[in-house]
Structures are given as C-alpha cells and as structure tokens.
Figure 1 (cartoon, rainbow, N blue to C red):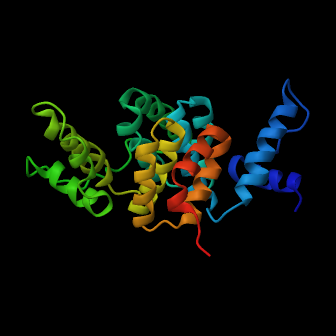
Figure 2 (figure 1 turned 45 degrees about the vertical axis):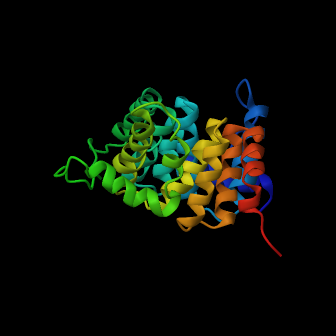
Length: 256
C-alpha cells in the first residue's frame, strides 16, 4: 500500500470514516495530519491499534485536548479496547496531571460510553479490601518497590518536619496504592502509558527517565517504549519527543 492507501485503511479501522480530502475549510491541513499519524506513524513499530489508542487517550488526557479525546475514546472502542481499559488509562493520569484535568477527561469519556449504550458505572476494578488502615501504603509498596526501590524516600529526606516522610508516603499511597493496585490494565501497560504521559507533560524529565527504567523492568521492550513515544509525537509534538528520547538515550539505545 502507498501512504494514501495506508491512511484510508487506518481511518476506516479506527473511525469508520474516510480519510480527509479537499473538502471543508482546512482539508489540506487534515491531509497532512492524517497522513503523518495514520499513514506513517501507525505503520511504524510493533504496537497494535488497541495499545496505540490507549497511548493516544493518555496523551490527550494529559494535554486536556477534550474534543480530540472524545474522538479517540470512540476510536479505542472501535480498535477493541474495553471500556474498563479506557477508563483505567484515564484514571491513572490523576496523580500526574491533577484531579481537575482528569475529571474533565472522565466526563468526556463517559459521554462517549453513554452514546454507545455502555452502562455506567463500569465494574469496579479496586482490589483493596479496606480492612487495614495501612493497606494503601502496604499494597502500594508491593507495587512500587520492585520497580523503583526507595528512590523517592531517599531523595526527599531533606524536607522539613513531617514532610520528609509524608511526601514519599503520599506518592506510594496514591500512585501505587490507589491506582496501580487496580485491575483492568496489566502492570506492563500501566508503566508504558505512564512513560508517554510524562513525555507529553513536559518538564518531567527526571521522572520520565525513572519510569522508562520502570517500564523496561515491567516487561516492555526498548522498541515498544520508543514506539509508544513516537506514536505520541503527533499529539505532543516533536520537541517533547526529542526531549524524551534524549534524556532516556542510555536506557533505550541498542547495543551491537
């Protein structure tokens, strides 16, 4: 297939619509956009449509690009993602982008679900029992330690008073105890989505490098990490792609 045929095929698969032509006020721009994302990037690398759409949903949630998020929640369903997978991808953005942006994304996502006749609320994916007051921390540490050790706790011992323990604990309880203990997404996928989230966020290169290492430990290959970052480039832009690749070069470069 040539580039135009590839673009048409991918648009049909994801959106059940034809690729852009000359119609409308900005047909030429849409042809450039679709040609790059759906004719080039979607055919480069190993990720399938389902995982690519979860990457896209994550990046668009991070960027608060709600009209595009609405379109790609629908595309995710068309690609075979379950509503639970989509919801978990959106939910786990909260510790990184904050609750207000995540709530806006949830509202957009639920609108698409309702339009598709998907009954809400979706089944709970929480695995914690709530029987122990310390469960959030203990379960969170079980998820955190194999990938990240005591890096955060060791890095912030300089904080005054109770914050030296409170800040690392909050991170363990919220990021890992509240979200990473949930079912609905494999740990490997959660780590890969966190990588593209941090790349799209910008200014989080320290955390990005740490999470690339975590994604590799969780079972992602170097090619899959690079593929996810390159796939995100059409949404977050090349500067953030290159920032991510440059800061993680030593982790991602291949050896002869």
